[in-house]
Image 1 (tube, rainbow, N blue to C red):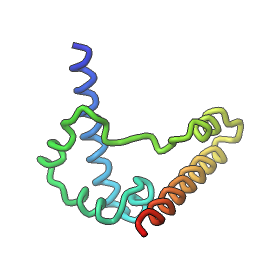
Image 2 (image 1 turned 180 degrees about the vertical axis):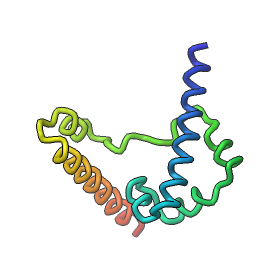
Image 3 (image 1 turned 90 degrees about the horizontal axis):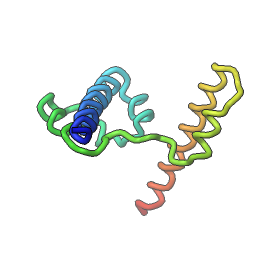
Length: 112
């Protein structure tokens, strides 16, 4: 029973995430693409999915979203940060932006 409960929660989270993705893309496409770290073509596809397609996509046993911090040191810097709250949010945004830029640079290098 525990496994069924976890799978239900994963599927609920997936659907919520996909609905949020569509909302972000509809409200401010360029910011959404940056925040979600997705390509233009992925943004087009996600924005065009119907409710039925979103529901079908969400019914998986794997999370569709993932942590943007793959490096434990980055996460530790944010969680053990003694800065003022406003500066902490700015620091988090800078870390995520630098991570995104690095991923894009690496992806561009592989496309050659």
